[in-house]
Length: 466
Image (cartoon, rainbow, N blue to C red; front, side):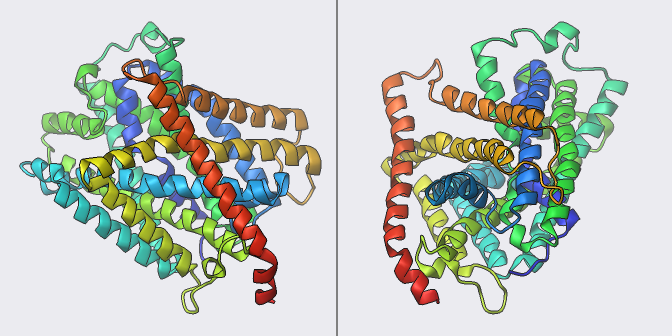
């Protein structure tokens, strides 16, 4: 594969993929305690994730990332299963992300167009169009496609920076819209609701492993990916934490929308400063950031069926590269077709739409499984392989490394445990459990069946390759 991604490409890829501006709105609406929760998520999940991904990338820098790491630690089946869960979760997530981007995009047109964002036809056309544009850029290869990621990363960074800047201006000129006393940042922090919210916020920090899935397309991945993780990690943490504070400064808590709170905050301050047009600019930047994020996740996800095709566990077509562009075009096209079907499901009649909603709920656990595997692989491979002198293994102390891996693992397991506990407003907990846990088991079973079927055909497929 063509190695075209450099350091700054990776930094912007991480920013556009990981930063979800909806998390800032959700966190700000949750109160001042969200600032402390962000800090705890940073310490117990984000930092361990950064160490794990950096070390595993240095030791095993091939295309496929988490697929390769889990395969090295636990064998082919578990590597395939981790990749399967990572891939299928993204397929179901794409429609949800596109609906959000479509809703924000109408704000670029100015006031009076909000109703367009409620139109199912508009959202459907926008979603399919953006998905196919991203699919086309993927087929054309990362030499061109990386610019979609880069523009998205810059858009996300500028959005966060504008919100933080407006927050600083607001607190200097007008004071904070909410009390900023010490007790308000820790009050009720140990309640079940806050614990469940914290576990969810941890996964607002997820995605550092994304660049490693593209390691075969990165120039000198052992040297470029780890520092890109550190550099982008600082930006991501600052945007989340200071962005939440800025929004709490800009708007009273009861007025913050969990969907478009950051737009509200910028609008409120912008109107006071006479720059109300900044909302339109911000909406454009958020839309570009969302499309960049879609490109990043779509690109990385497509590498998993490609690698499985190379390993002959999926039909050989999945492992083919385009003769001109060097992209895994068959895996990309198949992924695009399946994602399009999920988009259509999410807008179909009520029965099909409900089926898609159930499917979306079941991916909660599917999403967590690859991270469980990743932290376990980090712990096991550090114990088995130690820290070779020619590889980046920080911290060098094994006990500290195991503690970091254990922190990430326990945080992930906590999120899994909390995700199977229904909210207090759920009227039928038993159906919820059957839906989420049963759906998860069906996903895993499907992956196991596909692996077993593919494994039976491996000798013949590899012979054909030879």
